[in-house]
Amino acid sequence: MADFLRLLQNENMKIYRRVGTWVMYAFVVGIPLLMSLAIVSVTPEEPTSNWLFMYIASNILVNLIAIFTVVKAADVVAGEFSQGTIKLLLIRPWRRSAILLSKFLALLLFGLALTAAAFAVTLAVGTAFFGYTASPQDMFSEMARENPWAYTLLWYLYQFVSTVVIASLAFMISAVFRSGGLTIGFSIFILLAGGLITNLLSLLDKPIVKYTLFPHLELTSYLDGGTGPLPRYPMTVGFSLAVLGVHFLVFVAVAWLVFNRRDVA
Amino acid sequence: MTQSPVVRLQDVTKKIGSRTIIDRISLEVYPGEVFGFLGPNGSGKTTTIRMMVGLMSITSGDILIGGHSIRKEFPQAIRQVGAIVENPELYRYLTGYQNLVHFARMVPGISRSRIDEVVRLVGMESRIHDKVKRYSLGMRQRLGVAQAVLHRPRLLVLDEPTNGLDPAGIRELRDYLRKLAREEGTAVFVSSHLLSEMELMCDRVAILQKGRVVDIRAVRRDSESSEAVRDDVWFDVDRPEEALRALGGLGEGRIEDGRLTVTADRGTVADINRRLVEAGFSVYGIRVKTKTLEDQFLEVTRGESVG
Image 1 (cartoon, rainbow over the protein chains, first blue to last red):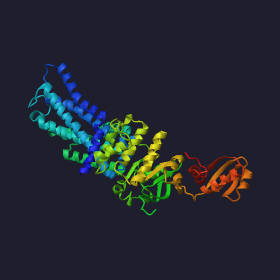
Image 2: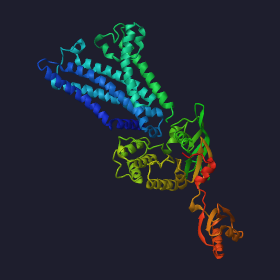
Image 3: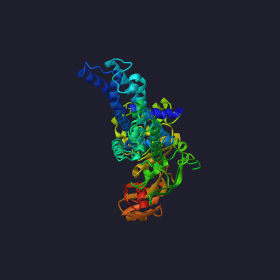
């Protein structure tokens, strides 16, 4: 066990010794700062609560974090292949499964750390610029007006679940194609095309849309008593989580099978 | 040799689709031996090495390292191997030292002092804290050797290790590998398409052609040549035909390409020289016509191109 932690330590070292990682953190810190400066300078007399600010800024940041996680997923597996370092990595006394697991966990930890940073920064910046309100009246959700902490935390939790599923999708593509550029391009294409496919299927009134991945990435639509991402098909959080879970398992299984079996050329 | 081999390839075969890339290769490498794996580009050297270190699956046959099968007991087998496969591709955005720490963490029991020792060994003290992207190919090659020997492997596998090294670097590497084999009893498996290289470095070589081992032979070293060994020797004399008649049964003489050539051992060569000089011939030079590995290689592969 202690030895496995050393693999994780290695993967973390390879993530955090790269300049790109810190540029990503700079975005997570910089965007809320710039946004609040903009809001303060444009509408100085109109009061914005710290919670509304946090909600708006976090919406931007979670999309950014999804992209950053895809980029890192491309790096941690495909990057080793394109740099050729995979050959030195796999000739150590470890099963390929253990190496792959350490990479996947490092990727999820990276996504978690960015999400936690986004939470902390938007909360701190919002409070610093707009003051702290215990019950923000400018929030559109009943739950958020009454208990902004619970609302925001749950919102972040749901977003993180989506990030994990997106990470597993990109991780699979990274392990299958072994090309960083292809991983980033393909993952983002799937995420964008996914929304279109969902819209198309809903328009055509096909119930199968309930079982596709993409609508379920919008878990936050269940907040405040909502019936989920598809207005025509009321669902529950449990159902959405089950669909996400099945996709997650398939992505991880494919990544594992391919990574374990294939020759390293 | 009575010792048990460090690595044993048993009828190793690799097929990709219907193509047979490697065809029933069997060979053994013993402790303290530098073993050359020689063949033209595309003959299957790198494929064989990839199977030896578990990067590629083996279609049939097996590879045992210290008695452990690389297919069935991968961690136990690979624990005893240090390798550079193709170019030493290390993490360019890390320093040399961070790279070594990275690989040291993957094998239990490698201390910081061992890392420092290896850094000294490859002579990288002054540059080890620079990022790898600032290294020359020669320095990356040294760092590659460092990561390969970090965990004191019983088998060191190097794929074309002299690629990109200058002559001084090649000599240094050669001396280091021989020292490792001699002093630590490491078995060294080196691939190359450069015959001259192999001749200087190896104890034995296997010659690979189109996925098959066509020959395995010992490389003779000058220091090991004894009185009993008979060589073809050229005598550069003024009248070869007459000189041949004057030999009178010393060695097996003949005229080759207009030159007096005698197959004889060392003592006889001296005797022949004395007789020729006493008989009034002018001897301008005596040269041992060593069969180079290149000659042998060309014989075996019948002159097909050597990459």
